[in-house]
Image (tube, rainbow, N blue to C red):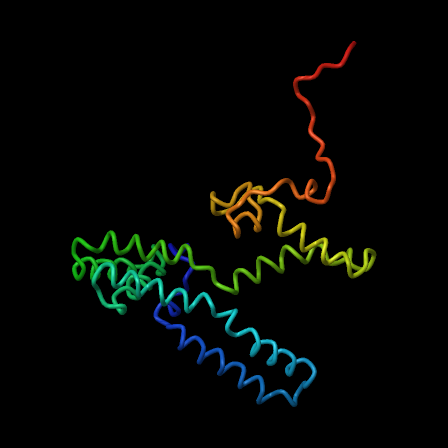
Length: 209
């Protein structure tokens, strides 16, 4: 088990470097497009059009790490080294050797700098994990499209945007919907928003015997 969701090699890669790697993959796909024009061509086009959205997290990560570097008056390279250290396996000696080295280098700043970097890592949402989560949520609904028609997708969109999370790895998201998390404002139950009356059992009422 690792202490951070960030794979070790990615901690040192900047947003511009990620873009270069991304473009390289697209170019390699384009070079092989003639092998399967219909599929590879569409995939390469989709990746080209979505690059900025998929890598938006990387640009935000760069800005957040730079802010941490300025706050603690250290170089950005040192902040990235802390991020990389936190991504290492707790059960490997390399992790503890790197932590010891950084502790000696940073002295009393090590703990608070490490906490700031960990918070940046925790709050950074990577596109791949968002897409995987989104696809997993949608997959179980798609079979209904054959029976309900194209308008079903609009209903599904409304439902997923306004259905509150019953559980989450992040406690602040529990009992809040994506719309509430985005806007910061509460809304009624999604059924009431569709003009339905939400049923609730009156626990205080008694029925005559």
